[in-house]
Length: 289
Ligand code: HSE
Image (tube, rainbow, N blue to C red; front, side, top):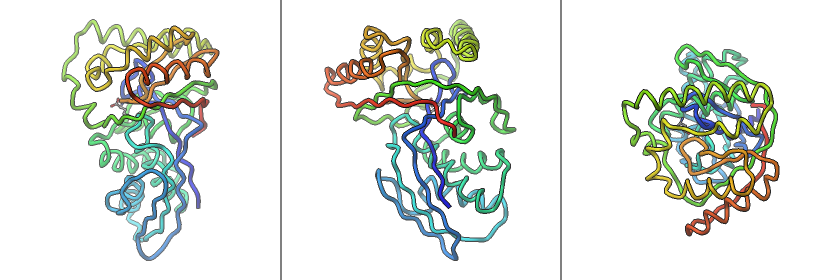
């Protein structure tokens, strides 16, 4: 049994903890076999190989426990999504682990699969946010209306985007710890307006307008000390013709929409490099989950 678990862009501009976009690449690969014992083999990026500490196996074990099934497994995780990159690396492994068990046991209940995956996500990032695991499972663009009683609205969108990945890490745990408990009402209203308009533009396939609506007043302003290069890279993207640009999840990865994605990606990489940070870009498209 083999599961492909895709990278995702959480927040997608104004949709903190609610919006998520599934990407076609990169993907984690999980090869799973039932067994008497529990073993884990990891290759690729460096993540724990202790089954009690690895997000994918924690999620797999969580689903087995929820189902009261006493069976072990041999899991092989090919970790291709860089951890702490902002591309939903832990969310992908979490969904991959839970989905592997679900497929083997014939479980179709998405609520249960997400619940198990959140155990892994929580272990990795300290919080059970769902805007990475949900788009990784459902594909397309997802609006997470509620997590504990799972309610997801999905838009089947199809477009390309450029993702820029700098060689710095931002821990989601840390990026959540800097957020205030209360936010000004005016900022909440601005985000609500942006998020609502963004959904309408996405439904119409108007990517230029989607790009214009990627601002955020709820979290990015408070995260700026962790991403001091953000404004400079954003400016470079806009100056090279991007429709819009934002942070992917809690960063450091950023993404942009536009026509000439190669050119936009190069400008963003140069802006990072002018800050002394090596970066790479890749072009991808919306994934199917
Ligand atoms: N919504 C989460 C956050 C995503 O911004 O903290 C983390 O990938």
